[in-house]
View 1 (tube, rainbow, N blue to C red):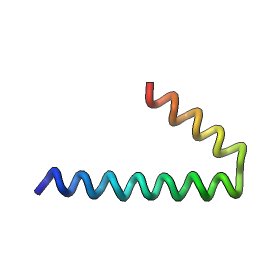
View 2 (view 1 turned 90 degrees about the horizontal axis):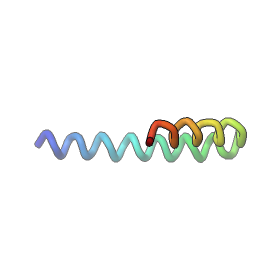
View 3 (view 1 turned 135 degrees about the vertical axis):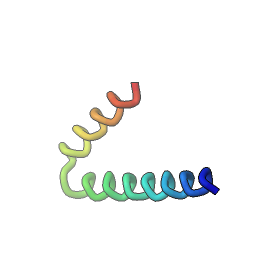
Length: 44
């Protein structure tokens, strides 16, 4: 039950993140690139 809830929360977070990245891409290409660098740095 708890695992299912975590999976659903992760799916929502990913969808939200993808939406925000698309929104930023259409509005602020520089900001999108900046965030992409931040995200890749967090991934290491």
